[in-house]
Structures are given as structure tokens and as C-alpha cells.
Amino acid sequence: MSQMPVVIVVVLAVFAAWILGAWLRGGAPGSQNVDSVREDMQRLLTTQAQGIAVQMGQLNQVVTHQLGEVKQELSQAVTNALRISSDTQRDVTAQLRSSTDALTVLTKHLGEVQQSGTELTQAAKSLQAVLGGPKAHGSLGEVALESLLGDALPGGSYELQHRFSTGAVADAVVRAGKKLISIDAKFPLDAYRRMAESEAAVPGEFAQALRAHVDAVSSQLIVPAERTLDIALLFVPSESAYSDTLACADDKGRLEDYCRSKGVLPVSPNTLHAYLSTILVGLKGFEFEENARRMLESVQGLKKDFDDFADVHVKLGRQLQNSRQTYDEADRRLGRVRSTLAETATQGAPVAEAAPPTEAPQPEEAAVLAPASASNNGA
Image 1 (cartoon, helix red, strand yellow):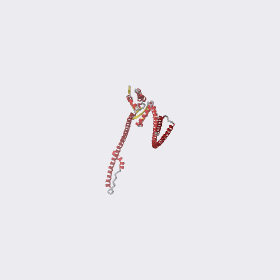
Image 2 (tube, rainbow, N blue to C red):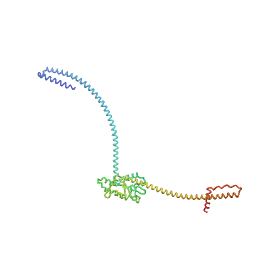
Image 3 (spheres, one colour):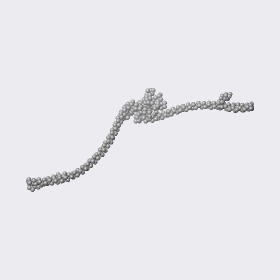
Image 4 (tube, one colour):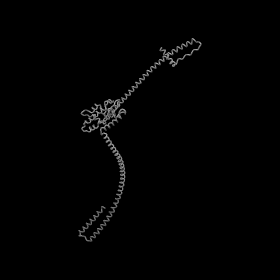
């Protein structure tokens, strides 16, 4: 098909060259020449048409053959493409299924995270509400103190909310033998927080609040008339606040020294546990001392019983000794009587049969004779 325009162009060029040659030879051609030219043109066109038809047939065969090959290759390519598309679709389906499962799990986890975030927000709000005022601070300290006491000491060795006769109430008291150790849990956290958040970190307000609270604890919770020790514990529910309290100082001196001068010892959750462990050892020592005292009283009672038994034993020994002496005396007298009877029988009745020997008295008979012998011994 690409050769046909070339053939037409060649024919037209030949025709134009022939007309130009005829015009140069004799001027414009006449009608006869025109007919001749027309016939030549027809023959030429017929020849060219036949040639073109042959070429078109050949070209058609070539194109048909090539189209067949292209069709076969295209069919092969379509088959491969369909297979690849099927495999790809299967892989994509598997990937989509996996992605769907992963998205489902992720959605579930996101829901759980959202729920946890909501609960955490609510807990934060609750904690903020708990830490909102001094009374709430005291309640939080009392809860932490109660938990520590319950973990470190037996139930009967401490008491919560102990009220003294003066009307003052200790958050807890620990019994150390017959003595009481007062514990207060109302640490001034508001003043400490303002000091910690201040850029200048001036301890004036916090030191003033802590000194006032220590004075109140010292005057209200140390009551020697009600068997309290000369010290009281100030529970600080935060380790950082406890450390800052020990290190804090103002123009009046260190807060730790002031607390000790008032007999009030600041304790954190960790140090309180150490104090309580020491107190527990002391309680065990008091218990051991009480058990030793009771054992000593029991031993003294046993000694008295043993002394009473020794007296009875001595009296019994004396009675047995008297009974033995009485028995020996009765036996001697019985021997003399037996000898006398034997001599009398031998001298006065030679024909008579000898009397049978008298048996020795039994212990029962000796016991009967014992009173008489005892009276004789006394005479």
C-alpha cells in the first residue's frame, strides 16, 4: 500500500513529460493527438492498474500473513496478559483480604486506645479533682498512709484517726509497747507546688506553711500524758517533695533542723517503711520481753510449787523414818517374846508338842503397833 502513491506520482510525471515534449515539438496537440494520448494513458493506466492489482494481491498476502502472525502473537499476549491479570487479581485479592484484616485489627486497637485515652483522661480529671485542695491532699495522704501501715504492720499494732482527750485527731498512731507514735498525713502540698512551679524558687511561703504545720503537729499530737512518745511523724506522700523539704532552707535556717527541734520527723513512703520496719522489730522485742516476763512468772510459780512439794517430801520422809523405827522396835520385842515362849514351853511341858513358831507381823500389823511404840519412845 505504501508503493501505490509512488506509482501514481511516476505515471503523472511521465504523462506531464510527454505533453511537455509534444508541446515543444509542434505546439499544442490536436484532437487526434489528444485521443492518442488518451489511449496511451488508458493503456498505461490499465497496465499500471494490473501491476498495482498484482502488487496489491502480493501485499494483501503479506499483510494477511503478517496479520496472522500478529493475531497469533496478540492472542498469545492476550492469554499471557489474562493469566498475569488473573494471578495479579488473585494476589491483589489476597493482599486486600490481608489489608482488610489488618485494618480490622487496627480499627479494634484504635478503639481500645481511644477507650484507654478516654479512661486516662477521666482518671487525670479525677486525680486533678483529688489534688484540688488541702483537704483532698490530706485524704490522699491518709489513703497512702493506711496502705503502707497495712502492708508493714499487723492489724492490732496501729490505729487510724485516733482521737486524743484534747480533741486533736492523729491520722494514725502506732503502738510501741505501752507507748504511742503519732503520724500526721496533712503535708502542705499546695505551698510546695507553688514553690516548685516558681521560676525564682523562693521557699518563703512553703517554709512558713511547713513551720506552722509542724508547730500544730508538735503541740497537738505529742501528748505525753496519753502515753505518746516525744516524737511524731509527718508523712510526705511524695519522694520529690520529701527530698526538697530536707534540702529547703530560708533565712531562719533549714526546715529539717526546725522539724527535729519540734520533735516532728518528716518521712516519705520509703523512709516510713524503714521506720515502720524498725518499729516492728521493736514491737517484736516488746513481745519477746512480755513473753519472757510471763515465763519468769511461770517459773517462779513452779519454784513455789516445787518448794511446797519439797516440804511435803521431807514430812513424808520423817513419817517413813518413824514408821521404820517403830517396825524395828516391834520386831525386837516380838523376838524377845518368841524366845521367852520357847523357853517356857521347853521347861514346863516336856511331853507337849512344840508350839509352832510365830510369824513375823505383817507391815499392816507393824503400822498398828506403831502408835504404841511411838508413845513408848516418847516415854
